[in-house]
Image 1 (cartoon, rainbow, N blue to C red):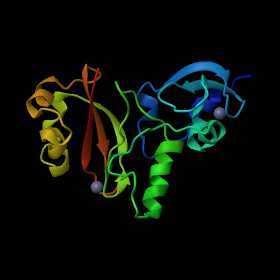
Image 2: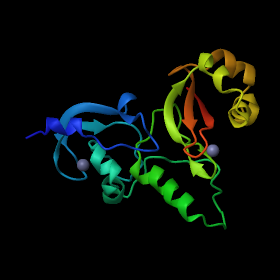
Image 3: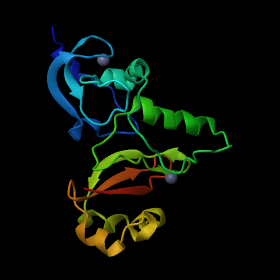
Image 4: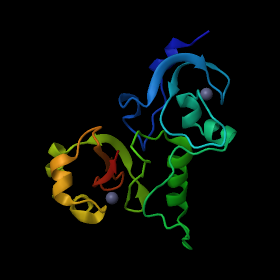
Length: 187
Ligand SMILES: [Zn+2]
Ligand SMILES: [Zn+2]
């Protein structure tokens, strides 16, 4: 039996506050492969695991069950975490792990690149187009992202960046200071 009422009390994700508004879940009856419970909604964005996983529920994302059962991750890359870092930031690493194993990802062309700020992973807000850029350009770090910091031509971004377009923008916000960051990906 499916618990439709489940959909009224969905878990929240602090690093993905708009998770249920961004088409990364699909309303579909099925059995979650992580908890084996009948569910009414499955996750459909990235999940990196050795096994092909067709159906995982949002609760198994939120409590880490899906990542644990399948030894998988939802996010392949979080920027500014040096791969061979000799530093240890306990909170920082814990939050990076939360993004990788207990936070849904988002749809991008090549691969998601979670942004960070103030030494923490940012919250992913959603798609962003060229028309939305100016309101954040007064912020130095967002401006740096637009003005070549990500390796893209600034004029191109300010003209062609489109929500869900061939040159797609993704907006992040720092949970500590509120600054915005950008990820750009092309088809
Ligand atoms: Zn589940
Ligand atoms: Zn910040």
